[in-house]
Image 1 (cartoon, rainbow, N blue to C red):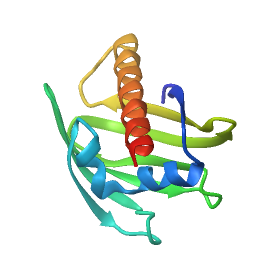
Image 2: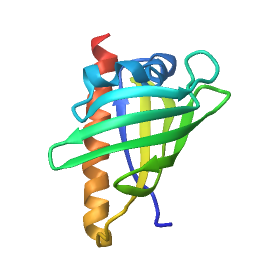
Image 3: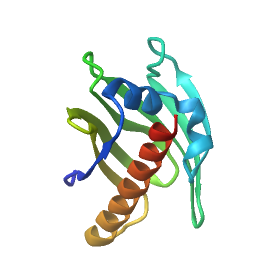
Image 4: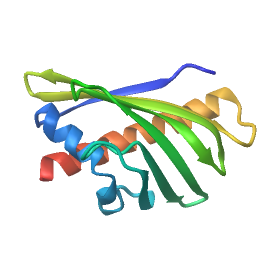
Length: 145
């Protein structure tokens, strides 16, 4: 599987506040542009779902997919893999949180393998766009709370 695309941003909040927003899947449709509905299909410990089903509508790209989550015991990272999806063969990703002087550095890593063939540079460009949008939406949500 190809390498992950990675991008970071600093959010003016502590890691626990950032992780609370990341883990609040039910609110994603309120603050993300592309996620239209979310259903926790396998609950985990309180606030830490094990599997989540998403309905995404990003204009030309529409998909329903399910991700399985693994939460770090220290509360500073979460990773996921694709369980099922109509437009994706695989997806793996993670958020890693690092406390810094101005708040929390959030590093988002992602690799998506679409079901249809897509040359590497186009796939990586799409991943970078997803990373950039997701991090900016996350910062806006956390900092407005």
